[in-house]
Image (tube, rainbow, N blue to C red; front, side, top):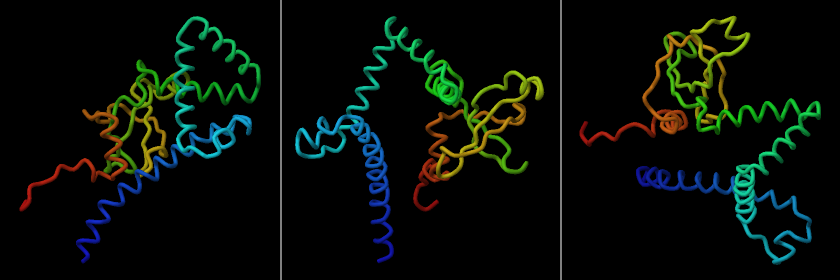
Length: 201
């Protein structure tokens, strides 16, 4: 009986978790419809709520924005918009910081989160998976010297949280794996990446 129950759990838990994550994601993106006047929302026009409509609208807006920003006229509008935001004291600091992070993460030419490393953490005899984010610049580089790299050590099972450190490059080990495989290690605590052994071994 216990064997059948565990087998059932192994089938339903991943499926339920996947549905929960997708529902959370779609529900969050659907919130974009709240920006529309009440009279123009699907509930008012069609008399019913259509799940996922806001997600589709959000993706289309992002795609169209990217297409517009890719031409000369769109780039000029973007520069104008950023100049306006740069004149607002508090908004300037927040927007500039977030933009620098997003430009680094999503740029195809950037080096952030491209290298997977092993670093000694939380003590000298333990190793943790980390992502190299950048090489120290400015005053930090002058203080530490050239043999340091900045790394982000994600926590398990939620890799969006973690720790940011400067470590000696000579004390790291670069792994020949992709970021997606490293994330599997972290989220599953090493279980999802284990190769299945033949029975009897």
